[in-house]
Image 1 (cartoon, rainbow over the protein chains, first blue to last red):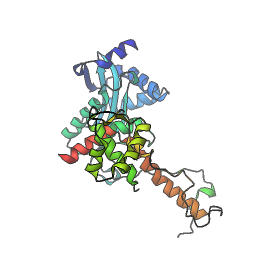
Image 2 (cartoon, rainbow over the protein chains, first blue to last red; image 1 turned 60 degrees about the vertical axis):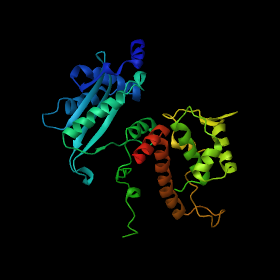
Image 3 (cartoon, chains in turn purple, brown; image 1 turned 90 degrees about the horizontal axis):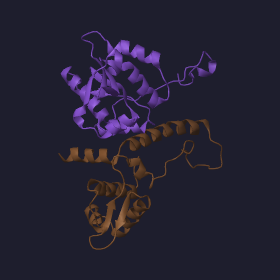
Length: 172
Length: 140
């Protein structure tokens, strides 16, 4: 931890962003566990298989930020075609930085790298979805220039066949 | 949602101060810029000072200056000093305050509370630093 703390003031040149490799997975799992309080090893192994070793030509990115050879953050994003009625659009659905080295521009660098990849892929829009009480990450994305998308997320409690759950026919 | 005049004035003032944190700005200068009475503005600035967002500077060249962290303070932090947000269950026509809430009351309350939550989340996600970036984009 002391070593990581000392990196807080690291020169920007020491930070690099690259595609994930299998050897990074333990660090990714540790950072996620530190942020969420829950270790999800099997989940991350599935994510790695899907996004870390995707076939060529698939527009998916599992990026890690590295300082002095140590993974300090990661981001996962992809291009989704024609979902939600939208032309091909970039989505970032995971971004995490080791809490001990925040405020050093690491997440900005990760997002900037994804942006560059999206531009090269001809994509001109990047979206994400967050819990509205996640003000820390919401504020980060806002600081990067993100504004509300013209979408409204909806959800439904799924009941197990109870008559109570059936919508009323009164309006039909 | 329409913000009250005091809230809008507070946001204008805080952004003025946050844009140049080292500078002392006389209240009269802000009052003139936004066409409001110095007396009216003084009440707003006093509230901001009580909250620790600005601090008064006495003497020649005095006024107020920013005393917070623009990268951490959100629009919501300022707005909630001046606006009351209705808690869930409070959106109801005052036709009969003593009467029990009807199913229509409760359904309307659910929809209006949903809108309130989105508004609060939006204000809570935008820091003063981000707001100043947006202002800069509008100027360019």
